[in-house]
Image 1: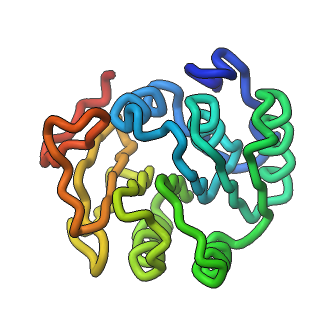
Image 2: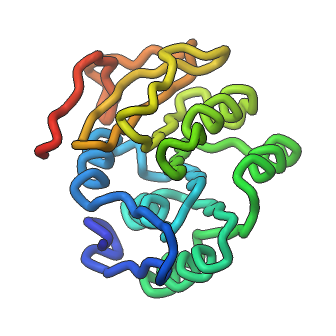
Length: 206
């Protein structure tokens, strides 16, 4: 597990020992960030169920303005801090040991807005659906922001919610990555870094 490109390119990331942490595979992460493109630059990032900090740190390495990392595990929070120090990205990182849904409530209370929200909850526990439901109600996504949720291909997420709509899904073996945006925002097919709406799924091979 490593940072793929940017200021911390090639830096190896630690994972908590003996913990049931499932970091995003490098091949999946690379594909996700290729889809996100230049919109990562100067983005305000929220990384939920952050685990190792893999996704948020990749965003910071690629030029994101800031990243807030949230995980309820003490071992994960310690590893995120170590990884942020190792990659020299700690100055733009805020790390919380907190229940994810309480953290979302705190963001609402503090009127925080994010351009990019990553969520990688444990698979097959209903947490992907619960998280998008909570984010849909929260209204903490910037008008042209993007939510990226990694989940099992056996967990189906609805296309439309009250505020949000699914704009893209990609399948990588047993892993599905779903992209959500605000319903009123329509991406131009010609916009640099745009995420095109599609019903197709990629195969497990990248």
